[in-house]
Image (cartoon, rainbow, N blue to C red; front, side, top):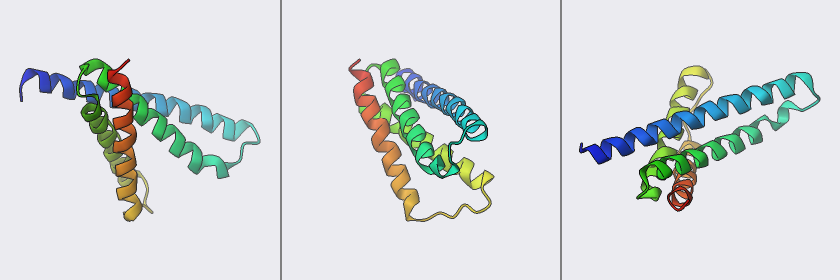
Length: 124
């Protein structure tokens, strides 16, 4: 692996980690809202999807801004890695986790959202 590719990969990993840190902060705030206000737990699935999509998009932007070229590739890779890690965490932490066709949709959406972020990020 040449230096440019290694640097790009490090940028993608760094952007995914930043995305996860932001997601954790948002979920902690959301947890406090659930606990201390009348916000219903029924909002949890939509909040989870929106926060995940937003942080994948942000990861795509950040990775593309750091590499300054091939934003759609670095953004898509960031989306794939983010989603793959999320699925691994789900398999480890959720006893009731069952892979199904939605798994492929989640991966595809993660790649697409990351790619869109990468396209935007390289042009910022």
